[in-house]
Image 1 (cartoon, rainbow, N blue to C red):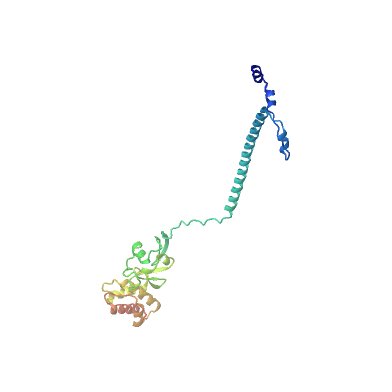
Image 2: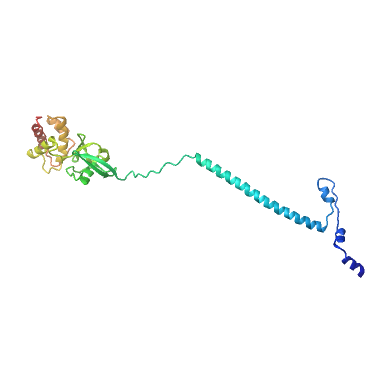
Length: 257
């Protein structure tokens, strides 16, 4: 018994390999050669190592292929994005100009040009009084109802309280401050004094401007025409009779009556 046990222990590895050789039957398919092949423990270990190496190489190859595919996909995607971006219409430029900001305008007032920085919503009456100091143009109703702020723009009477300054740029503006520069205004101012055309005279500058437009277009007006021309100018003192007399006196001094 001991001898048989020792013999079993002293068996060489090659003999042990032969003892565990097994065969398998493979009757169909490409597995026939693999099934009928003699597989030993050594060849099994060698095959496992080779398979692991192949799997490792395959995984590395797959990863490299995946990176290559990913790089190709990324470049394709970036090309596609760049192409699409190029076809998108460009965004409109941002407007930096403030529509309510200051604007530089040139006003011709009583024959003098003034360069002013005004806001688009600034009214002519405010600019004349506050910016230029021409305070003969009064402000009362701010609704073009009383005629106190009447000025001449290109020879026509306008209520300055409702005229935007930017709209008056480039036009000729006349206020009651003009005296010796205009003979009609000068004659009316003199007649206002001699005929007592004004009591408080708050409405005087507006009435004189409206009467100036009348006498320039009609040197010899009737009383009805004077009333019609001054109908938009209110006198808070009710001094209408003297106002009409002052206009008639100015027309006479100019040679119209």
